[in-house]
Length: 69
Image (cartoon, rainbow, N blue to C red):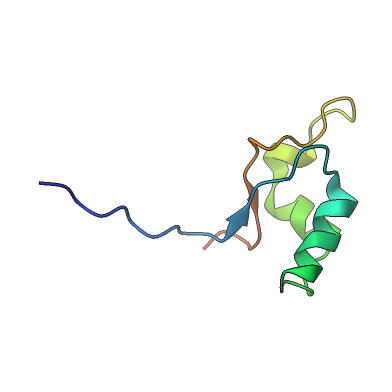
């Protein structure tokens, strides 16, 4: 018997290939999340914010669009 997957707890997106933080914020504004700032994204995603600059975002990353609940 299969069970449906639970709904996600936090809204999230995945970066497009070669997309940096600035491009991600711009894309979010275009797709209907205009109030999200870079500072908020960095605060909600410390697992990505503390990467060295030589380690950019990848399409496999999960970027949360809201604070933990």
